[in-house]
Image 1: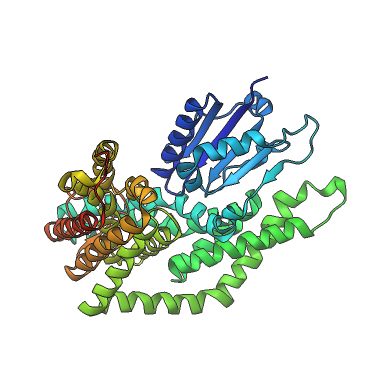
Image 2 (image 1 turned 30 degrees about the vertical axis):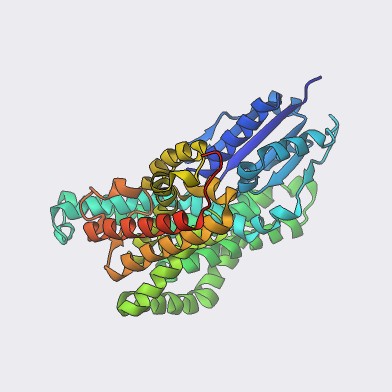
Length: 457
């Protein structure tokens, strides 16, 4: 009987890695005549969702995800859990590994979950944080752009009550961005403790927003609420007749109370002081400090192109939007566009150093680059990391530094060049475009020098 494999792919932003991993697995399955169905959990929600019958009939399930994907429905099945990047780099190896797993018995009570050492760094706190960020992003994107629209009528037009600019500001800032920190905290807690963590996480995040602790306070509130709720769920034991009170009464009450009191009396004040100091430094720093910060953020964006360093820089910049600090976000998005744009340019100016397949891939990378999808450079980085990654880091660092030096700002955390025509979404748009162009050229020239000629070019 033919063994059937299921796979789930999900990345924090749900834009690039999710679909790149799905495509890589599907192509490997076709090439090796393996029965495979891939469920994607991206920005558009769940697509190609598994039925209960498909799960029951599956030999094994590959979970290539960095956010919570409700793995409880796979109970009783053999599950291979890996970082999503593994599915992009080694799809055939994962399929072979899944086929070699022992099929779970129909009466199995516990899933045979294989968690290799390579996934350890993607689990725990990293996964929980990325789950919060992925749910927060749509609010930040929508809120930032709607606020930018309000400035079309004048930078201070929103101050006049009852006007359209005032309504736009209320929608974008008073509603969408106001939910940013609570949603971040709530879904961090949800990732840790599932449903019992959501209420205390949302409340803890709201308290962080109210007391000025900002996104740092929201992150702490999320982890605090999640682990408190999980501890209460695992610790409190009640007679069977009263077990139903735990999820709807006891855990929500106690976890929200504990998290709330800790946020008010223990966490809130010191984290607010940290956020105030950080905001003050960022808004008053001199040109030299701005250049170094932009250089660091830019290099981080290109170091692993969607990995932990990239996400750390991105999360830092997104969090500052709630404090009305828009410079780092501009530097991060500009730098994140450089790697795919640079490899695309390199395939044009140094054709002999790339195969015909790589030159075709360069065209795709260009489209991904202008859309702020850094992952477009991953195939090139995976094939030649010691030349590609340093080149991309230098170019992205230059772009980040120039963006900060020029005083560029960005109110939306995604969109690439497509947000630039929106009035006031980008501060100093011409200088912003110049910083991207310069970094792209620097990275492409450096890569063209470092690369060796391809015999098959």
